[in-house]
Image 1 (cartoon, rainbow, N blue to C red):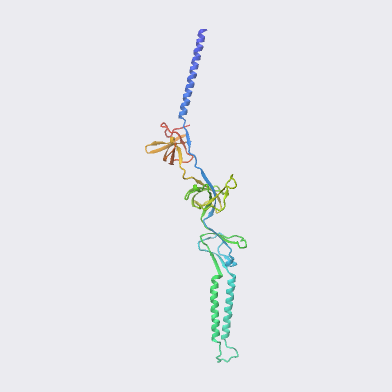
Image 2: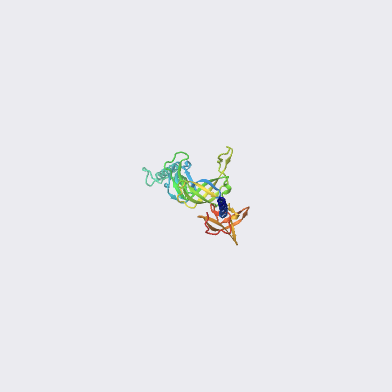
Length: 349
């Protein structure tokens, strides 16, 4: 009986010792795995600025009916016609001046008849009669004719007035022109297209000349690259209330002109959304993620659960962070704490 108790006691000691050993092993294994676990760091995206715009030609002009030039007019180009700078677009005829010219021409005709009639001998006159037209009378009629011709010459210069294209472009003629003072006869738009947009005062400082932008065409969801060509620092007259603020809070908008790298899928009048990146903000990563070898620096990118060595260039440090000027981009995933045992191609969990 005593031997039985001893055997049971020994068995319990063995079991207890095994349990302690197993727990110690698991604890050590867990610690090793924790030490081997790699801390990841994802480079955050820069805050992006969005604003809306409309595709427009760089130049446009509307030709309204100008009654001071005449009530009668002729449009010399067809709808949709492409014209060069200086092309004749509209011809006005001043009916009042045309009537004056017609009256003067009638007067000249009558004066010529009078002159011819006065120079002919009368039927009852004897052939050798020396009583002919008074030369002073003939000279007076001739002077009047010359005077009328000079007036006609001056008036003819005012009879027709012409409107010419101030720039090359495409002609648009309304199918039904509205009558009245503001009657539109013709529209001319240049062939080149740009985006006319507005930037709020909160985003004005982020907007720079020659800055690249991404443009989304809302009509067809196509993306186009662009570049900021002009920024006007004179705000639009209309100010827009800030959403969620009291009624007295308003924000000014500033006109911006953006070029298009491609005119494909873009039509005059299309609305677009412009995405502007903060180009001045450089990427910052933890200094613990950077390894130096001689004059070179690198980090480990994490791609498909493998380590990939990536050379970088830096512009100094900021606290516990290193400023990266090239080699990395937004959303890249890197090892946050690099160590000497890591190597390229190493698989990680």
